[in-house]
Image 1: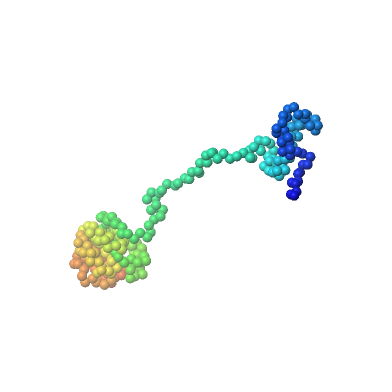
Image 2: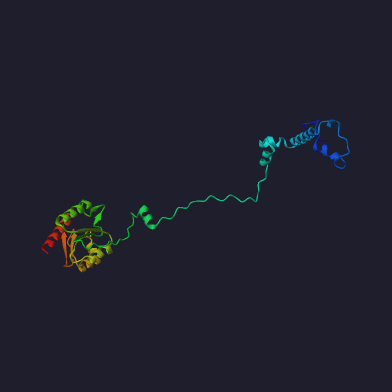
Length: 256
């Protein structure tokens, strides 16, 4: 036979013992027990203590101890059911930064590795145009020499400024850009052209030099046998050939 469940309060009636005897009978005409000679307020307090003791024997601890509440309002707030129909809180708004314009992106990112040919507006007011074509410059130096192009360009600009003539410089490794400069040059312009001693490999540039209205001076390490009669050649001068060609152009302008 199973052992009876131990009771924490042997002198206090359980809920069944308290309610079942009066379930089918009239409780109003029955006399009160002898132990209920206390006042009515004390009687109700004793009933509450009995119920609390029974609940404590079933659940272990009181609601006040479990939820840390001190008042009835605190207890109701602690065990209040969650409203399932309550709408969820609105999601946090995320501020999306505006998409930058194309000009802003190019200003921030830049295109240092953009090798597409760029058409440069030709300066028609220049008297001398220096064009460095394909492979004329390499690693900031004039191909085949140790001369720095920035130093040579500064010397040419100083030489042209002293002579009182205009000077423009264009560098491009694209054949079409060089052709555009040759065909857009006016008859009052002298073009100093250096194609890195590869002019023989560019028939289109040779044709553009023959069709150009400007006076063309070719800088080559070796003479070009198939050069047209309108283009003059300066060979074997290396980096110094730019200064020789510019000096020749200045003297030609003085004679005009």
